[in-house]
Structure formats: structure tokens, C-alpha cells
Length: 326
Ligand SMILES: [Zn+2]
Image (cartoon, rainbow, N blue to C red; front, side, top):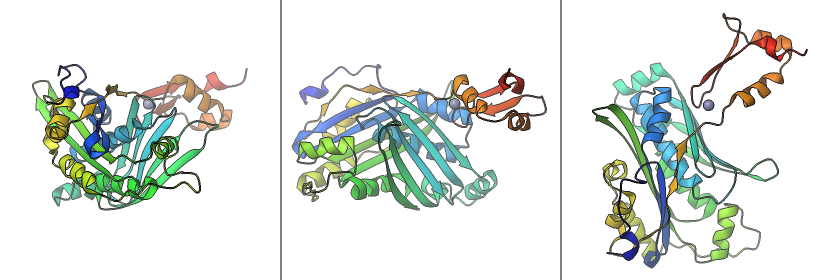
């Protein structure tokens, strides 16, 4: 058994954690994410029908995998805009550990898709695009990568993103499951990402800071999919969906299963929490930007302005008079 994997496997850190790792003999690095209570709370807040929840779970696992890999301050966002039953998904990852998500879908079309047996995650997306945005704050440049969605699903779209934008061979696997326990239904999501380590560490530092933005004249290393990458990819690809969402299988155990012949080194896990950025202060600031007349137009039947956060479903109410100039 590889020394680095002998760390005690405990209940601690099984869920809502990202575990980075390297498989040095295969020049590959990656990360495993296991989401338990965090994804269950995100999905429960929206009470999404199961097929939509599955898709949002995939998008959230993907966002955490990619976002937690960035060494940055700020926000990483994954967004889909498509013509499918689920026409928009937005997942925000706020460094270093916060995630939130929502999706928009048409209930009638969803019922039809379910009746036709066409409600798999990729089918619900349809065609459009997937945008990945790194926003490091007001003074920093914003980076956006866009890949077309043409029915291939999020895993394959992620592979395309890394091929096109970063030229790093990457394998991504995502799985979502709903388990029925004594306490009710619980959603779990898991993901595995494996990347071929670029030979140049300088280039890698560059890629961490500014993905897809290597300075002109930079010699890009040859990322031909050589034998070691082929082996890393095929080992990683043997991961089963149920392993990615199994609450009794730790990420360390999972990595050991996949890579024990080559030896895998794991690093400190990173916790992930479901947390929204909405707050009274932010909403009040937004409301203050409107004129008194505009604010009066927003009031509902109860005479108050009702605002529901689309990410966390928190409903807040405000008296328009509180915002009038004194
Ligand atoms: Zn919120």
C-alpha cells in the first residue's frame, strides 16, 4: 500500500470535501469531490424534480472540481444557456469554499420529457453553450471560456473546455444519486477530475493564474496523449457512478482503488459549504438605487416589496417607505 494513502480513513471529511491528489508515475494530478449535506440542502431549498436535481447536482460537482483547483480570490461561475427543458443553470463557487446553485426549467416540458424517457441530464440540457467565468474582483481581469453544448452533457463539455482553452488533457467524471434513508431522501453528488501534468511548472503556474491566457511567445509543452496519460485516463475512467456517491467509501479509498498500482499521493482536503451571498445589506443597497416611484411599483398586495433569492430561495420583505429620502 502506498504510504501516502495509509492516512486513517475516518468519518471525518467524507462529505462536502475536495481531495487533491497526484499520481506521479503517470504525471497526472486531480481531485475528487464528494458532496453530501451541502448538495442535499442546495437541492432541497429548490425542491427540484429528481431529473432536474440530478443535472444541477452534476453542474455543482463540476463547478466545485474546477473552482477549487484555481488558486485565486474571487468567484468562479459555471453557467449553461440552452434550448432544453432546463434552459439555464448557474453555479457560483466563491473561493475558497462556498457554493450555490440554481436552475430554470419548464415544468410542462419536463413532464413530457419524463413521459418519453428523455429526462437524462444531457437530454434536459439540449443545445446551447456552457460558459466558465473566473472573476477575480473589480480591479482584475475577467476570464471566460465558452464551449458549445450539443447534447454531449457536462462531462464531455468539460473535456472540450480543457482541450480548447487550456490545452491540458483532462478527464472528468460526475455522478449524482438520491438515496432513500430512514430520515428521508438525500441527494449526493461526486466528481473526479484527472489532468495530465504539463511538463513545465512555469507554464502550470501560468495556467493556474490565467487559464488559457499564456503570454505570447510562450512555448507550450507538447501535450500529446502519450502512454502514461492513456494509462491514467483509463484507470480513472474505471470509476463507477455508485463509487462516486457511496457514503461509505472515502475519497482516499476510492483513489487507492483506482491508482494503487502506481501509487497515489493525496493532499489536505478542502471543505466545501453551501452558502449564498445574498444578504439584507446587499438587497437594501440594490433597492436604494431605484427611485421612490419605482419602489412603489414593486410592492405586492400586502404593500411590501417581496424579494426571493433565486439561489437560496430566502424570501425577504421590505417596506418601501423605509427607503424614501427623509
Ligand atoms: Zn440567497
